[in-house]
Image (cartoon, rainbow, N blue to C red; front, side, top):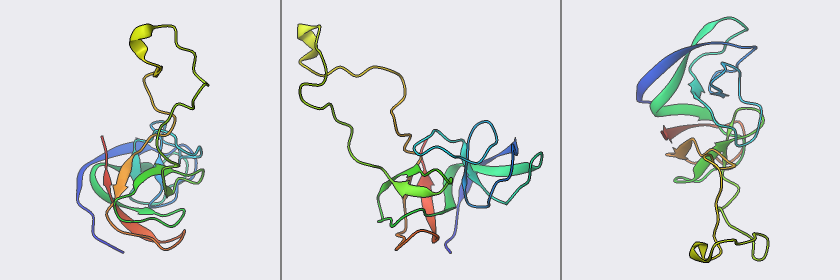
Length: 138
């Protein structure tokens, strides 16, 4: 396992069980939806009601949920582990109606992307279950 350099570790109250080195949502629960927005990564394991440290800024250690290459943008899987993003954002041809001539065919709506990229891989993982250092995004 690698080092970590946490610049900001916040405290959240655990909502349910949380595994160490897994992503935690802003509600204090371990992440359970692929691509969800997260507050950070749990520094210790916890049970419901425990106050836990959550690395929010800097680098941290997280469990991989798949093979990861150095530099990959990372999202969360349904178990709170890091996985590579599913691909580039695109607008399929012919699938988006254009009501404005100024839009030139590209219309993006909403304030959040469908996958929240929370970190970039500083180390590779050959498979799920490995622990790697990541650079958290904000």
